Image (cartoon, rainbow, N blue to C red; front, side, top):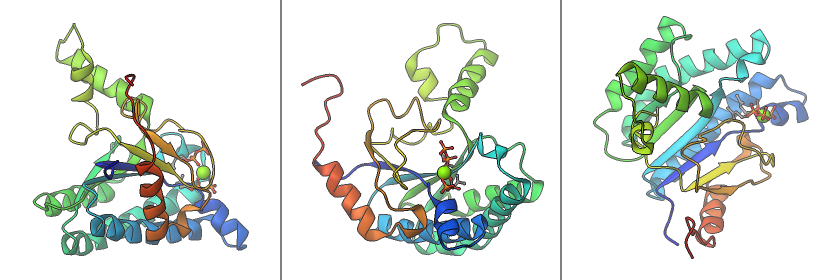
Length: 226
Ligand code: IPE
Ligand code: IPE
Ligand code: MG
Protein backbone atom coordinates (compact mmCIF):
# COMPACT_ATOMS: atom_id res chain seq x y z
CA UNK A 1 0.00 0.00 0.00
CA UNK A 2 1.12 3.56 -0.70
CA UNK A 3 2.50 5.74 2.08
CA UNK A 4 -0.02 7.30 4.46
CA UNK A 5 -1.29 10.74 3.57
CA UNK A 6 -1.59 11.70 7.25
CA UNK A 7 0.35 10.14 10.14
CA UNK A 8 -0.80 11.07 13.63
CA UNK A 9 1.71 10.61 16.44
CA UNK A 10 0.83 10.13 20.09
CA UNK A 11 4.10 11.20 21.64
CA UNK A 12 4.42 9.00 24.69
CA UNK A 13 7.26 8.00 26.98
CA UNK A 14 9.07 11.28 27.66
CA UNK A 15 8.64 10.88 31.41
CA UNK A 16 9.91 7.29 31.43
CA UNK A 17 12.86 8.25 29.23
CA UNK A 18 13.96 10.78 31.84
CA UNK A 19 13.15 8.69 34.91
CA UNK A 20 15.21 5.78 33.57
CA UNK A 21 18.18 8.10 33.42
CA UNK A 22 17.56 9.57 36.88
CA UNK A 23 16.63 12.91 35.28
CA UNK A 24 13.66 15.20 35.94
CA UNK A 25 10.64 14.53 33.67
CA UNK A 26 10.98 17.91 31.98
CA UNK A 27 14.33 16.87 30.51
CA UNK A 28 12.43 14.03 28.85
CA UNK A 29 10.08 16.58 27.32
CA UNK A 30 13.05 18.63 26.14
CA UNK A 31 14.48 15.57 24.44
CA UNK A 32 10.99 14.88 23.08
CA UNK A 33 11.07 18.22 21.25
CA UNK A 34 14.34 17.21 19.59
CA UNK A 35 12.65 14.00 18.45
CA UNK A 36 9.78 16.05 16.98
CA UNK A 37 12.27 18.10 15.01
CA UNK A 38 14.10 15.00 13.71
CA UNK A 39 10.78 13.41 12.79
CA UNK A 40 9.65 16.53 10.94
CA UNK A 41 12.80 16.45 8.81
CA UNK A 42 12.33 12.73 8.12
CA UNK A 43 8.68 13.27 7.18
CA UNK A 44 9.75 15.95 4.70
CA UNK A 45 12.42 13.68 3.24
CA UNK A 46 9.86 10.90 2.85
CA UNK A 47 7.32 13.27 1.26
CA UNK A 48 4.54 12.63 3.76
CA UNK A 49 1.96 15.40 3.21
CA UNK A 50 0.34 15.62 6.69
CA UNK A 51 1.48 14.84 10.22
CA UNK A 52 0.01 15.62 13.60
CA UNK A 53 1.56 15.42 17.04
CA UNK A 54 -0.40 14.90 20.26
CA UNK A 55 1.75 16.94 22.62
CA UNK A 56 -0.58 17.96 25.48
CA UNK A 57 -4.00 16.54 26.21
CA UNK A 58 -6.94 18.17 27.97
CA UNK A 59 -6.23 15.68 30.77
CA UNK A 60 -2.53 16.54 31.12
CA UNK A 61 -3.48 19.53 33.31
CA UNK A 62 -3.72 16.92 36.09
CA UNK A 63 0.08 16.81 36.22
CA UNK A 64 2.19 18.84 38.64
CA UNK A 65 2.40 22.61 38.27
CA UNK A 66 6.11 22.19 37.68
CA UNK A 67 5.67 19.75 34.80
CA UNK A 68 2.84 21.72 33.18
CA UNK A 69 4.66 25.05 33.34
CA UNK A 70 7.82 23.36 32.08
CA UNK A 71 5.89 22.02 29.08
CA UNK A 72 4.40 25.41 28.26
CA UNK A 73 7.77 27.15 28.61
CA UNK A 74 9.17 24.59 26.20
CA UNK A 75 6.31 25.27 23.76
CA UNK A 76 6.95 29.03 23.92
CA UNK A 77 10.65 28.56 23.31
CA UNK A 78 10.23 26.01 20.53
CA UNK A 79 7.58 27.83 18.52
CA UNK A 80 9.24 31.22 18.96
CA UNK A 81 12.58 30.01 17.64
CA UNK A 82 11.03 27.50 15.26
CA UNK A 83 9.81 29.83 12.49
CA UNK A 84 13.17 29.76 10.76
CA UNK A 85 13.30 25.94 10.89
CA UNK A 86 9.74 25.53 9.59
CA UNK A 87 10.41 27.89 6.71
CA UNK A 88 13.69 26.21 5.87
CA UNK A 89 11.82 22.91 5.47
CA UNK A 90 8.73 24.50 3.84
CA UNK A 91 6.51 23.24 6.71
CA UNK A 92 3.08 24.76 7.32
CA UNK A 93 2.26 24.77 11.02
CA UNK A 94 -1.23 24.37 12.48
CA UNK A 95 -2.50 23.99 16.04
CA UNK A 96 -5.43 21.90 17.19
CA UNK A 97 -7.03 22.40 20.60
CA UNK A 98 -8.45 25.10 22.84
CA UNK A 99 -5.93 27.91 23.12
CA UNK A 100 -7.96 30.11 25.45
CA UNK A 101 -6.30 28.97 28.71
CA UNK A 102 -2.80 29.76 27.34
CA UNK A 103 -0.80 32.88 28.21
CA UNK A 104 -1.18 35.82 25.82
CA UNK A 105 2.49 35.37 25.04
CA UNK A 106 2.03 31.78 23.88
CA UNK A 107 -1.13 32.67 21.97
CA UNK A 108 0.80 35.37 20.10
CA UNK A 109 3.69 33.01 19.39
CA UNK A 110 1.25 30.42 18.01
CA UNK A 111 -0.50 32.97 15.83
CA UNK A 112 2.84 34.23 14.56
CA UNK A 113 4.14 30.78 13.62
CA UNK A 114 0.89 30.00 11.78
CA UNK A 115 0.94 33.34 9.94
CA UNK A 116 4.63 33.09 9.03
CA UNK A 117 4.33 29.54 7.68
CA UNK A 118 0.89 29.83 6.08
CA UNK A 119 2.29 30.03 2.54
CA UNK A 120 4.54 26.97 2.89
CA UNK A 121 3.66 24.18 0.50
CA UNK A 122 5.46 21.16 2.01
CA UNK A 123 4.52 19.11 5.06
CA UNK A 124 1.45 20.23 7.02
CA UNK A 125 2.33 19.76 10.70
CA UNK A 126 -0.49 19.97 13.22
CA UNK A 127 0.37 20.29 16.90
CA UNK A 128 -2.38 19.13 19.26
CA UNK A 129 -2.01 21.15 22.44
CA UNK A 130 -4.77 21.16 25.04
CA UNK A 131 -6.49 18.81 22.63
CA UNK A 132 -9.01 16.07 23.39
CA UNK A 133 -11.00 13.97 20.95
CA UNK A 134 -14.27 14.29 22.85
CA UNK A 135 -13.71 18.03 23.32
CA UNK A 136 -13.09 18.36 19.57
CA UNK A 137 -16.40 16.70 18.70
CA UNK A 138 -18.20 18.75 21.35
CA UNK A 139 -16.85 22.08 20.13
CA UNK A 140 -17.79 21.15 16.55
CA UNK A 141 -21.35 20.36 17.62
CA UNK A 142 -21.58 23.51 19.74
CA UNK A 143 -20.35 25.55 16.77
CA UNK A 144 -23.10 24.12 14.60
CA UNK A 145 -25.74 24.62 17.29
CA UNK A 146 -24.71 28.24 17.74
CA UNK A 147 -25.18 28.76 13.99
CA UNK A 148 -28.72 27.44 14.41
CA UNK A 149 -28.09 24.15 12.56
CA UNK A 150 -30.58 21.42 13.38
CA UNK A 151 -30.10 18.45 11.08
CA UNK A 152 -26.44 17.89 11.81
CA UNK A 153 -24.66 15.52 9.43
CA UNK A 154 -21.33 13.69 9.67
CA UNK A 155 -19.85 15.98 7.02
CA UNK A 156 -20.92 19.03 9.01
CA UNK A 157 -19.19 17.68 12.11
CA UNK A 158 -16.02 16.81 10.14
CA UNK A 159 -15.86 20.30 8.71
CA UNK A 160 -16.14 21.90 12.16
CA UNK A 161 -13.43 19.88 13.89
CA UNK A 162 -10.14 21.54 14.78
CA UNK A 163 -8.58 19.27 12.15
CA UNK A 164 -11.05 20.23 9.41
CA UNK A 165 -8.31 21.05 6.89
CA UNK A 166 -6.53 17.71 7.38
CA UNK A 167 -7.51 14.33 5.96
CA UNK A 168 -8.30 11.67 8.57
CA UNK A 169 -5.12 9.96 9.78
CA UNK A 170 -4.32 6.82 7.82
CA UNK A 171 -1.86 5.74 10.47
CA UNK A 172 -1.69 6.50 14.19
CA UNK A 173 1.66 5.76 15.85
CA UNK A 174 1.80 5.72 19.64
CA UNK A 175 5.25 5.24 21.09
CA UNK A 176 6.29 3.72 24.44
CA UNK A 177 4.32 0.49 24.05
CA UNK A 178 1.08 1.76 25.61
CA UNK A 179 -1.80 0.43 23.54
CA UNK A 180 -4.54 2.99 24.04
CA UNK A 181 -5.94 6.10 22.39
CA UNK A 182 -6.13 8.39 25.46
CA UNK A 183 -8.85 10.62 23.97
CA UNK A 184 -6.96 11.48 20.79
CA UNK A 185 -8.75 12.10 17.46
CA UNK A 186 -11.74 9.90 18.20
CA UNK A 187 -13.88 11.00 15.26
CA UNK A 188 -11.01 11.14 12.79
CA UNK A 189 -9.54 7.74 13.75
CA UNK A 190 -12.59 5.67 12.88
CA UNK A 191 -10.63 3.69 10.25
CA UNK A 192 -7.03 4.54 11.06
CA UNK A 193 -4.42 1.81 11.21
CA UNK A 194 -2.81 1.70 14.66
CA UNK A 195 0.82 0.97 15.45
CA UNK A 196 2.33 0.80 18.93
CA UNK A 197 6.14 0.61 18.78
CA UNK A 198 7.92 0.12 22.10
CA UNK A 199 10.44 2.93 21.55
CA UNK A 200 10.05 5.89 23.92
CA UNK A 201 9.26 9.12 22.08
CA UNK A 202 12.62 10.87 22.78
CA UNK A 203 14.37 7.96 21.01
CA UNK A 204 12.07 7.99 17.96
CA UNK A 205 13.94 8.76 14.75
CA UNK A 206 13.94 8.23 11.00
CA UNK A 207 14.50 4.49 11.24
CA UNK A 208 11.43 4.12 13.48
CA UNK A 209 9.46 6.22 11.03
CA UNK A 210 10.55 4.02 8.13
CA UNK A 211 9.58 0.93 10.16
CA UNK A 212 6.14 2.50 10.80
CA UNK A 213 5.70 3.01 7.05
CA UNK A 214 6.71 -0.58 6.44
CA UNK A 215 4.17 -1.85 8.98
CA UNK A 216 1.51 0.33 7.37
CA UNK A 217 2.37 -0.91 3.89
CA UNK A 218 1.54 -4.47 4.98
CA UNK A 219 -1.87 -3.61 6.39
CA UNK A 220 -4.98 -4.25 4.36
CA UNK A 221 -7.58 -1.56 4.86
CA UNK A 222 -11.16 -2.55 4.24
CA UNK A 223 -13.38 0.27 5.53
CA UNK A 224 -16.14 -2.24 6.12
CA UNK A 225 -15.87 -3.77 2.64
CA UNK A 226 -13.80 -6.71 1.45
C1 IPE B 1 4.33 12.21 26.56
O1 IPE B 1 5.18 11.67 27.51
C2 IPE B 1 4.30 13.72 26.59
C3 IPE B 1 3.10 14.29 27.22
C4 IPE B 1 2.01 13.65 27.53
C5 IPE B 1 3.15 15.70 27.52
P1 IPE B 1 4.70 11.38 29.00
O2 IPE B 1 5.00 12.59 29.82
O3 IPE B 1 3.29 10.93 29.04
O4 IPE B 1 5.68 10.20 29.38
P2 IPE B 1 5.38 8.95 30.29
O5 IPE B 1 4.17 8.27 29.75
O6 IPE B 1 5.16 9.47 31.68
O7 IPE B 1 6.62 8.12 30.16
C1 IPE C 1 -1.46 10.88 25.85
O1 IPE C 1 -0.45 10.51 26.70
C2 IPE C 1 -1.44 12.35 25.62
C3 IPE C 1 -0.29 12.86 24.90
C4 IPE C 1 0.64 12.14 24.34
C5 IPE C 1 -0.23 14.29 24.81
P1 IPE C 1 -0.65 10.33 28.28
O2 IPE C 1 0.63 9.83 28.78
O3 IPE C 1 -1.19 11.59 28.86
O4 IPE C 1 -1.79 9.22 28.32
P2 IPE C 1 -2.17 8.16 29.44
O5 IPE C 1 -2.39 8.92 30.71
O6 IPE C 1 -1.01 7.22 29.57
O7 IPE C 1 -3.40 7.47 28.93
MG1 MG D 1 2.44 9.06 29.03
